[in-house]
Image 1: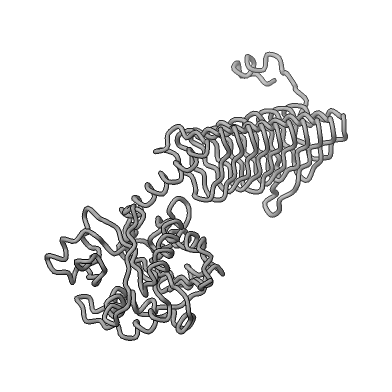
Image 2: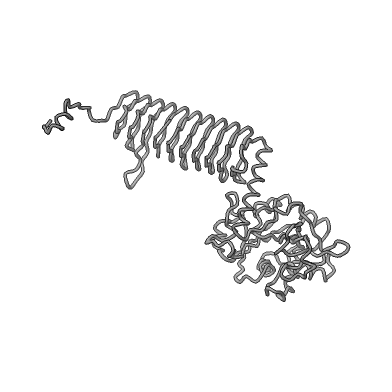
Length: 459
C-alpha cells in the first residue's frame, strides 16, 4: 500500500489569542487542539507525522512527546515555507502527504479518510479540502474553470472583486503527491500582498505543469473552523461539545441538558447512565452502566463501575466501584480506591486512600493516606491525622471497625478488626481487634459553678 505522511502546521504565534499559552495548546473539550488534529490524522495509519513548530516549540514538544517528529520554522515566512522545513524527513519519498493546520481540531478522521480516498481515486497531484461558506471573508477562494476543475486558489487579500464573490473556500487542508509537493515548493515565491510564501501557490505551479488538481468539498463547513482567537475557540468548544454529547446519547446515555454538560472526547460512558446538568467529565474517564452522575459534579480521569451515583461532588484520578454513593458535596482526591457498595456522604474528603466494601463515611470526615477495610463505619467528624508537618503516615482500619463521631486517629496507627473507638477520642496507639478504645478526658461537672462565678465566689 502507498505510504502516507502528515505535516501538521503548528508554528504560528497566535497573537490574536492574547494569551501566554501557545495557540495550538489551547484546549477544546479538555484536550489541546493540536492533539485533536494528531489523533484524527493518526487514524489513517500514517507512516510519519511531522509537526512544524515555531513559537512555543518546547512546550508543544513537551505536550505531544514522541507521537510526532518535529521541525523548527524559525522565521514565520508563510505556509509554504513551513512545509518546506519538513524536507529533511520527506523530500524524495514516494507517497501521499496530508498537510493540515494545528488549529483545526474539528476536522474528523472520516473527513480525512474521504479526502485521501478522493485524492487517490482521481490520481491527482494535489487535492484541496474545500467547503461552502455563507461569509467567506478572510478565506482563500477556490477558483474553478467552466468544467469545474480547479484553476487556482487566491488569498482574500489578493483576490479581485469577482473572485471575492466566490463562496467555495480553501480550508487549508490538502493532499499532495509527496515528491511533487517538495519539488514545487522550491519554486514558490513571495510576490504577494503579505510578502509570504503561500502553500496554495503550489497548486498553480502544478497546474502549469499540466498536473491533475482536484478538490474534495466537505458537507460541514463548521468542522473546518480554524481557531485564531478566543471567539473561535468558544465556537470550536461548542461544536465539539455538541458532537460528543450526541455520540453518547446515540449510544444509550441520557444527558438531561446537553447544553450544560461537558464531556471529554476520550470519555466512555455505559448504557442507561444518566448525566445531569452542570456535570463536567474530563480526560480518559470510564463510567459504567446505569449510573447517575450529577448534577454539578466534576469527574476527571476516573474508572467508575455500574449503578454508582455521584451528586454535587468532585472525583479525580480514582477508581470507584459498583453501587457506590458519593455526595452531595464530597471530594475524592487522586489515587483513591472506593470499593463496591461504599457510601461517601456530604462534606467528606478522601485522599490517596482505599475504602473497602460496604464501608460508610456519611458526613463531615477526612480520610487521608488510609487503608479502610470492609464494613467499617466512620462516624461524623472522623479524621485520619496523617501529617506531622514533615511526613505523611498511614492509618489502617480493619474490617468491621466502628469509629465514633469526632474521633482523631493519629497516624501511624492501626484500628483492629471489629474494634470500637468511642466518640470524641484522640487515638495515638494501636487498638486491638474487638476492643473498645476511649481516649478523652473524664467528664467533670462542677455544681453551682456558674452561679458562684457570677457572685464573685471561687469554686
